[in-house]
Image (cartoon, rainbow, N blue to C red; front, top):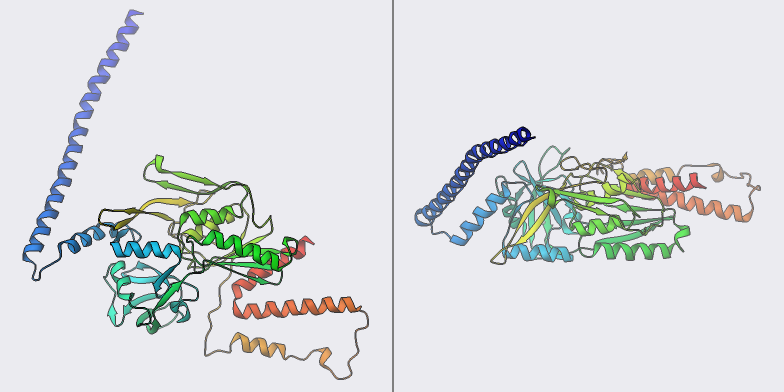
Length: 445
């Protein structure tokens, strides 16, 4: 027994000696790293003073420091950056749904400004700007090499003023100029319409208005159809929705889920990870849902699409989404500015990260591009409607096998079919989504 105790004690002493021997080099390495950091900060101070004293023109010290801070943050990833006081104010206004500008969400890629998505019913949208367009020049001035914030500043200006941007678009051989008149952008976060027996909910952004707008529009559209029993399903249109507030994406997802995980966020440290679960209650009362996405659907839009897809609550239709799977935290700073810092990645309920990958639709449906030189779909539809049928022939036999009620039902069905054909000309992807719900209803009957 005494031998065992001694052996154990000897092992403990040896362990203490070994730990001490290992700790000394680690402490030395940490001290060395700290010394290097302080040396680099001293170097920054030296450069700052040299620039302030010897640059060819007098410089503003505050602007120099802000530029240095922004350079540090933007070197991390495209979504981190410094927000000067005015930019911080603008961002807070945008989350409330009204601001001045062109109406586009942008990022930076290959040194140029890339359009994530145009915002519905804004000057950029009306001018034909598309998701995926590259902006290379603003009023003839190249944006190559500019930081994103500086490029965005070039695009800002008084409401009512003209801006000319040069656009490079995939499939178009030459760059082209687009003239846009700046305007006050008033975002309507959610709009609804009824197509046949389907409720279409168009969600354009995730700001403070999104969930209340979704709830109100859904209820109003259901009442228009005479109650939930007359609704065959819902289309949630997230195309060209650049995202916004994470809290709103969670509330919108939760609106159609009774239980289960909505999203998880994982930061650098395990204790910073968070998992959000749905609460009981489904605004759609179990009715089928189709979610529409495209390359302009980003961030919060991808959280909603990914959550409903993973829970098999919705069929996702369209094209692959943008692939922004990171979370930015806005941290107010002294001096009324703030920094936007990427602090986590988010994951869908199945555990997939969509960072740089995007959400892949269950059914890929491309939106045909209109070619002004080709025969338009409207003309093709009109030509098709002029085709002769048996009923058009002189002296044709009448159909006496249908009652008056059956004939009335046939006419209503024909009207719905013609409406669907018209919708395909206007918006092929939306028409496809509506057809899916109509097919599910037919199978269920």
